[in-house]
Length: 468
Ligand code: PA5
Image 1 (cartoon, helix red, strand yellow):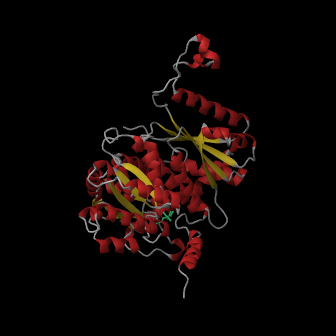
Image 2 (tube, protein in one colour):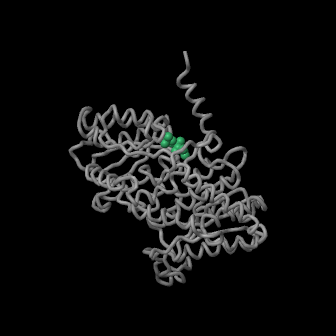
Image 3 (cartoon, rainbow, N blue to C red):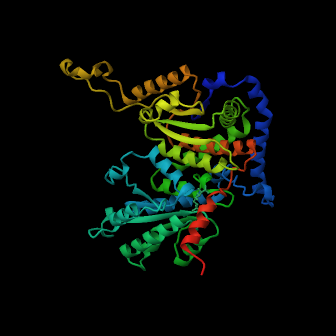
């Protein structure tokens, strides 16, 4: 049996009255029941009452549904297609923005070699290099990637030059992604030949059942298109084809990812407050915000692998609960790097933040140790640390930082991963998506939808497409 993720808020105990914790129990149970009722409502396929729209609770049961083949053999088809694509290209360009981009970035950074793109194909075990576009409007980046892919010495005859596109947009109408798709589709058609089979087969659209991208995919005859189900919102879609397909191309164990998520949902459903990572996390964050004014949620990651995960969570929390002039402000930090930039403020600034560490415990075995040098060269005094590895040094930094915060009455909590692997990441994604949904129901904010983002889109549309 795989050791599960733990949430440990014990360092917050002294800041939360016991009566507040027990007093919250009925409300938090009601929020859990509401989130589960959302799932039942969606699955029954009935009409969603206007006050509950949009309702994107489909992410909750999706991992178990995929594993149990309730969606047919979608998972098998997706893996087979990903394996075919991987064989045929050495560079994968993923186009998407927001929820259609950030989950994959988190997976890639957490689970692949930090220098993946710099490695030879053999060192990458045949997995393609990965590039992100369509997630901004940046001319330098788009131009540079296009020339990297299609420069004069590039040829489809060289295995190392071959590339393909995964284009992801649930609505199919997001301008940044749509423009990038047109730009890179044109480049791909010029590279392989406009009417070539490759120009069709090396484009994989992932999109909702309806929309402009779906229509375009049909019109252009792309043979493989994967769905983003109705009832799963963008930032809740990492465990649909959105994250799973490109992750499978990269050789990530997507079944382990889904199993971790499915196990987390099971715990969420069945465990009581006090033993339930989702409910405990929500209760801790909520009470510290309500009773102590800690409205900034610092997600404190250690080492470099979880920064993109933090960005994914920043988006999830900000877009889900930042409504009606309410909602906590998320902030991801990467330590020890950011101890040298933000550490001062966390230690002595305004008392407005809860710091949640994500730690891997026990620390993974390290490969890089402090070298021993001759005594006359030990002017930096590091011989006393010789043979200590990076995880050992990082563990000292984590313990020292938590101690410093505790001494200054700065609340911290820990999410403890027994390892950083696909299973644990599946648990973590699902834990925080569930927590966001529960907190929304607890405070009376619909966690789904992002009505505020429409304002910029509409204005931009008016500027770019003025009516005559
Ligand atoms: O969470 C969301 O729904 C958004 O962040 C979307 O993912 C983002 O706007 C991209 O939308 P789409 O996938 O429709 O292009």
